[in-house]
Image 1: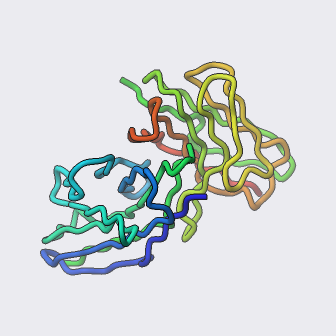
Image 2 (image 1 turned 45 degrees about the vertical axis):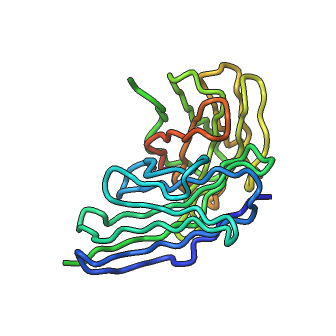
Length: 113
Length: 113
């Protein structure tokens, strides 16, 4: 069965600093990868996704993630964070022969002034 | 465009009571999912459905039942609520194949006392 590991449960950073949120998944066979963001008391929103093609995918608000098949990773990065990026971020995977959309335990990003 | 709608948004149950959570989507999606979110645990899949009339178990199905009699609706039932089922429940739906993003409802906060 697919599984997702988010290596950091909490990441505190200062505003305008770079950040990396790490995600590893269990299978490299035909998977699709997603990053979702959850703001307080809200549902989850898609941030970006990797389906195929270029291994570097970008979101409209400056985040990017790189699919690394050999390391089975899909780390999320942003070169300069804002206070408004404070949220919980979830990595998710589907595929590898499974129809289940499986999530990691989440990483709480706190951006301090 | 409503997207994914969950009802109710909040509910308090006494131990042993039953209830049904309703998820409705207006995007003609084939896949639907029920998750529970608990602090530090991420989103755990309870049950899912890949089409009308079909359901399958996820990671934590015990104590829950589901039905998908209509394509647009996915019901989650608790026959005899327990305090361990206190959680925030999220419904999600996605289009036919596993390479498309899932859209989430706003969640149902359930407290069992």
